[in-house]
Image (cartoon, rainbow, N blue to C red):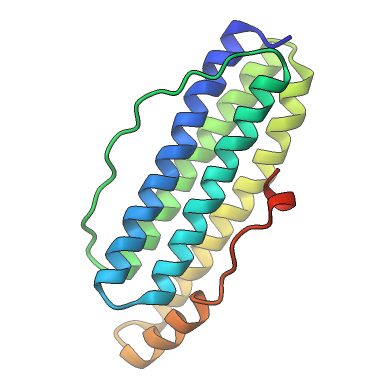
Length: 170
């Protein structure tokens, strides 16, 4: 059985994961406005992945006899300075999510909630990957600088990102 404290904290995290999806969808729209369909695709795939994360928490709450209560999601920013700014904000956001996951893990330890610890270990590992992915794009964007040709090549590369597989996210 899931404690009320853990249930409430996970419900908050569901909201945070859905906000992440909303943020990345907003970033995708911004990239579309710059005619960077590859960057936009990367962000759309990221948004889909975040919805998958929210559903992983959702299913866990229900599977343990808890109740999901959906909370209001804030409006994400719509304007950014550049593709580099988009990815720097992505990294900053993922670092915040990492802190949230770590806090949930700490709560699961305090609650002696071993099932939540197992679930959250998956997210701890996932956050390492999330931060690494954003950092690599940032490093590449800094390397190419103002080169439009290199930016278009990177756009083409990012356009190859595929939707997450259901078994990878669940």
